[in-house]
Image 1 (cartoon, helix red, strand yellow):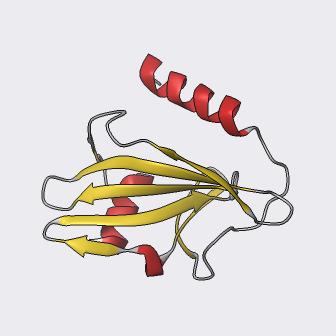
Image 2: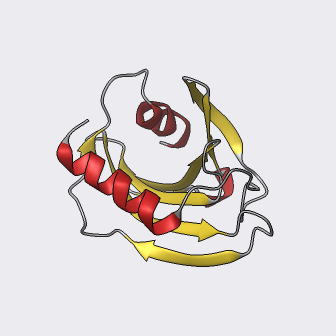
Length: 125
């Protein structure tokens, strides 16, 4: 894991804390799309939008369902970029706030077909 990714991961953990139990917040249509090392990833089909070759979607994982990411995928260039992250109360599911990640980093290559990002692109593009 490179230094930048570790820094972002540490910052997100510090910012939001770790919840032991949390509801899948905000969307009622969470759909499983990927599993990796005991972590299940979900996206909300109702949040998928298309604008030319660009797609946006919200996703979360089973480790931290109270943290929901909005990502933008360039389906042609096969890149992904986090646009924002929402935080929900682990007990009630109430919306607690959002962090705008636009401009925080450049789009990253989606990578190999067995990655979370590749599976998300496959189901949304």
